[in-house]
Image 1: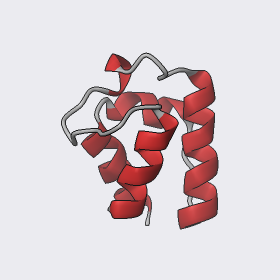
Image 2: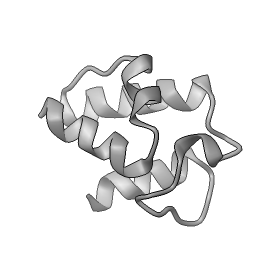
Image 3: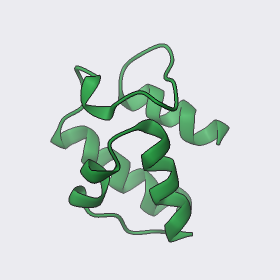
Image 4: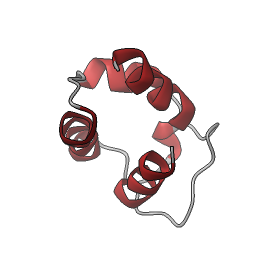
Length: 71
């Protein structure tokens, strides 16, 4: 979880995140950030995610749960 939160915080260009934060509430949440998440998940976890799956996850926790469901 530590690596995940650290990476998401970096991708979102903020100092910290809360698991309940909405992904769309971040100014830097865009298609490029989604691509970075896809690349991170492929490299770090060896899983494949679609942009739609990521967008439907809605929150930081929802995204983590999506990743966990693919492991």
